[in-house]
Structure formats: structure tokens, C-alpha cells
Amino acid sequence: MNPTTPAPHPAIRTLRHDPDVQPFIVIWEVTRACQLVCQHCRADAIHQRSPAELTAAQGRVLLDDLASFGPPHPLVVLTGGDPFERGDLEELVAYGTAQGLHISLSPSVTPRLTRSTLERLRDAGAKAVSLSLDGATAATHDGFRGIDGVYDDTLDAARMVRELGLRLQVNTTVTQGNLSELPAILRQVIALRAGLWSVFFLVPTGRGAALEALDAHETEDVLHWLHDASRLLAIKTTEAPHYRRVALQRRGGPAAPEVVGPLYRQLRDDIADLLDLGDAPARRAARPLLDVNAGKGFVFVDPVGAVYPSGFLPVPVGSVRDRPITELYREAPLLRWLRDPDRLAGRCGRCAFRQVCGGSRSRAYAMSGDPLGEDRTCSYQPAS
Image 1 (cartoon, rainbow, N blue to C red):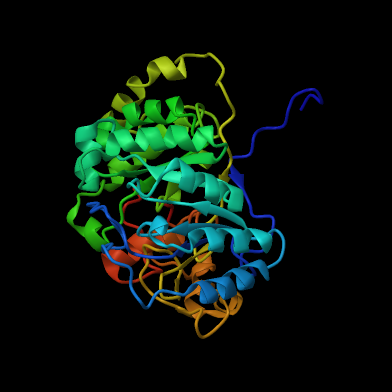
Image 2: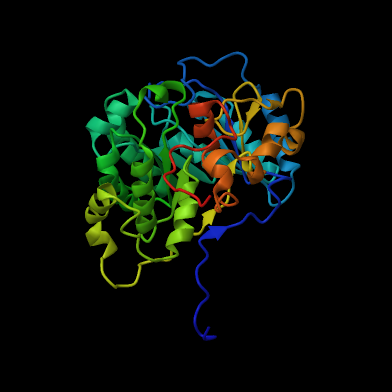
């Protein structure tokens, strides 16, 4: 390589620390209370807070334990339900920040999401806010959320987040119902100047069990399309770790015609003006994807303190009421098994990409009852 030529941009980033020892990100579902009735809600949220939720004092203990993992500290996301239903949210953000943790928020768009509340949480130390946008029109998004007017309020909230100097992440859950709107949603995310678009691939849990998820071939087409779109903004996927396999296969090159189908071509045609098709150079280098999966750099805590590999994989490994999360993350058998790709079964176990993909463990469990089983929403056929 010519010394003046930059090194190839890596497709995958590995964690700076051992994922057997500490997680990269911890999601704490501080409550299941929420005033929305979203069709896809993993938490099957309720309108009133439960008295069994971790108290502020117990939450401080959890935050202390998370800080004890040491630098680089895990990223901590306070979610729900709607975390803004907790009156002590500002206290928890300030306490976690004082312990050296980077705290982000994932609220619902309700009347509780106000400028003054966001300002107080920002001043307490919150760094970022993620908002959900599940349609390119009010009809689709509000139908998804179960409340009229949420679409317009979400766009206003996203602009407010940016105005207050907080990082903005937009989350979109992909189903058959909004699949055709993905290009238009992408345009909205770009217009909102979001720092990250997180695309969720539906897992049939909670209320989401009644929705229609994408099949394996549709998923493959969408992942290849997202790889193209990553030239325009940073993109990550949730419950679709085979996006990392796609990134490695593509390495900046075009999608193989025999791999993609008409859905990919339609989605790509719909953003052709953004991509500037042809031999023109990409507008930006695609952000390298992070090698994180359920139990492998990722862990979830529910409102009462139960710990799970993921919020979409409802198999508890213990409770922070009984053992520190540091011990549970490092020692729980299921989490250790999930970090061992040689334990995977079916095509996932035979796949040459299992070290950096591993399949959606949540979807494997939802479809077969085995968290180490094959992810049937992946169309890739590994060699024998």
C-alpha cells in the first residue's frame, strides 16, 4: 500500500475491554409505566407505576455497582415504559453522572416530555436522548403508538433535543406495516440531524407478538440497503447482528445481484438521489459496527431488578437485589454461554461469521425456545 493512501476503513469495531469482564452498554428499564399503547411494545407497558420497582436508594446501589466495573464505564440508558414517569429521574441521572457514568434517556413522547424537563435532565448530566419514529406519516406512526398527534410531537421533540445540545438518536422498529416507508423515514432522520439511526428488527415478544415481522429474505434486503444508507449517516441495528456479516461481505463494494432481491432494489431506487449512484465517491465513510450482542457487551435490568441478556430475551439470570450486577454479568451461566459462539446451534453454530454476528439470540429464543438456537431470520447459508 502506498504510504500516502489511508488504510481501509474497518467494517467492525471490537470493544476496548473484554466483554467477558464488563458490558459496553446497560439498559435499565426504570419503570413500565407509560401513557402510550404502542403495538410493538416489548414491555407490554402499563399506565401506573408498580410499587415493586427499584427505589431511588436501590437505584443508587445499582449505579454504584455499574461504576465499579471501572473505566471505560458502561454506557447506561434509562428507558421504560417511559422513564419520565419517575419523579426521581433527575436524581438518578445526577447520581450516576457523579459516579462517572454516561447516562442517556429513552423517553416516550407524551406531555411529560417538556423543554424544562429536558433542560433539568441535561443539567443533571444526561448526554443523549433517543426518540422513536416508526412511520413517515402521522397515520403510520400514530397508528403504531396508539395515540393521535404523537408523530408531530415527536418531530418537535427531536428538534428540541438538538436545540438543547443533547445528542439525538432516532429508533425505528421495522415491520411489514412500515417497510415501504423506510426511505422516507431515512430522509426525516437526516433532516432532524440525528447522530444515529437505530433500526430495530421486530422480535415477537410482548405486544409485538401480534405484528408481522420481516422474513429472512426481506431482512437481508433491508440490511444491504442499510449498508448503502450508512454512507449518509451512522446506522446501527438491534436484533439483527447479521448486519455485521453484511458489512464484512460488502467491504464498501456493491451488493451481489444473486444475494439481494426486488425489495432491496426498490428501497435503493427510492434514495438514489441521496446516494448519487454510479462511480461517485461515498459522502462519508460508513461507521464501523460494534461487536455487541445479547449478554456479550450488553445486559438489561428490568424495573424490579431482574437481569436479562436483552430486553427481548425474557430469561432472567438473577436479580440486583440479591447479587451485584458485576457478579451476575461475569458469572451467570447463560451470559457466559452467550459469549461463547462455539455453543451456538444450527446454521449459527456452523457459520464462519459467528464470532462477529452470532445471530439474534432473542429471536432464536422467541421462535424455538432455545437462546442458543439458530436465528431463522438470517438467509445466509454457511458452508457445511
